[in-house]
Image 1 (cartoon, rainbow, N blue to C red):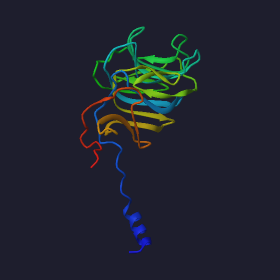
Image 2 (cartoon, rainbow, N blue to C red):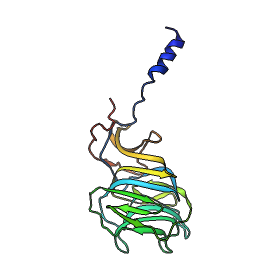
Image 3 (cartoon, rainbow, N blue to C red):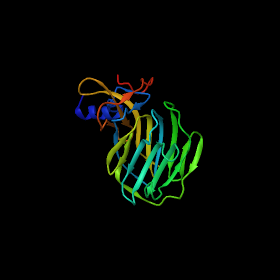
Image 4 (tube, one colour):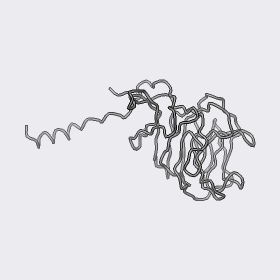
Length: 228
C-alpha cells in the first residue's frame, strides 16, 4: 500500500482518540485547608459560575471560588459561605469592598455540612436551594486584575484563606461561552500515587493542586472516563 493511500485511509477511518490525562472521574475533590487551584481565568461583568459543592466546616470565609484585588475600589468575584454579620452563602461581585459596599447578595441560609448543593451565580444574582437572591445594587462593568482561585479566598493574586470544601464540578462562562468546565478526577502522579485534580473539558488540561499537601477525593464515578 502506498503512503498516500495509507494517509487517506487514516483520515477516513479517523485518528485514534488520545488517552485522557487522568484515570477516573470521581465524586468530588476536597480541600483540607491547604490545597487550591489557579483557574487562570479573570472574572468580569459577564462571568457566570455554576458549581456543585459541599462545605465541610463553618468559618468566617469558606470560599468555593474567589479573587479580590484588595483595594478600596477592588474588582472582585467571590462565592463563599460567610459567618460574619449573619451566616449564609454570599456572592460578592464587581467594584468596592466589604466596608464600602460590594455589589452582593446573600442567601442567609446555612448549608448543612457535607451536603452537596447546586449553585448558580451571575450578574443578576444567586440561585441556591431552589431560591433566587437578587444582587443589590446592580453591578457595573469590570474585569479583575488577577485570576480566580478555587478552594480558597483570594486577594491580590494570592490564596490567603484556603477553605475546607468539596467540589464535584464547576463551570465558568463568559458571554455565555464556557471557558472552564471542571470535573473532579484522580490520576497517577510522578511518584506512582493516586492524586486528585480538576480536569477541564474545554482545554483538555489537568489542573493540579497549587498549594501544599494533597486533595482528598471521592469514589470513582461509574463510566466516568476510566482509561483502558
